[in-house]
Length: 298
Image 1 (cartoon, rainbow, N blue to C red):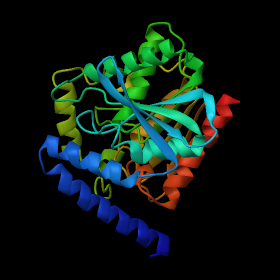
Image 2: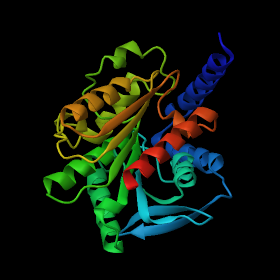
Image 3: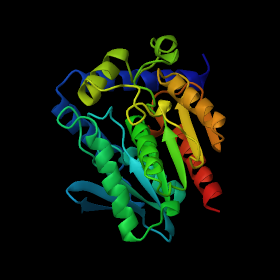
Image 4: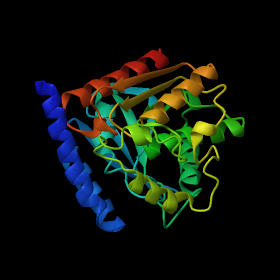
């Protein structure tokens, strides 16, 4: 086994142990341990974090402590299966995004299931979008980004804006998006043995919390079934060791069919939202996100 492969394997084993440890406790403890993890791993002197309240929704602005681009802004939707996660947990991603792009990032704490099932998260995302518009940003000044369930939320927000005949964001960045809650991708089986982060049981539990009794093919629940005509440029990143691999590949295929300017990178040996981890491939992936943003903001 090559040195890098062995290192990846060790990292995956560590993540599996950590994920298993938090998965087995109750939701509230799980959420707290995620926040602890996020605060610990994202302690950076390079960025400044400012908390805000948006009509009762907690959020935070992440900005770099240097001259940076003010015209454009990144609106970030955190992951966590719609039942966990927060802006603090997402700092492992938002601080990297802010430093690699030199842009301000706004991340927000949408209401979580099972206390607040669908459509609570989608309503909160729309509220935060409207808040940005009131601040004076135009839709074309906003890059919408998200990981996992946050990728789902970014897609469903864009579908909602489209349905309301409103202007769409300048671009979308989706890291390991959970685009299909119906489990139709073959990777749910082919990657089940090697995915260190996600399992069918975990996803099933998240679906029961968030969308119990709902039509799972509804485009705002499984955006894969949405209509992507007229969508902004989109960049998708996914690891080839994750059960959601086909969520990304099927989404890419559908977007290509709808003539969306879409690009996808599949990272060999990587797992679900590997960009959170503090190692070389994660930083390289963030640099690719920054390149995509610079390209569409030219």
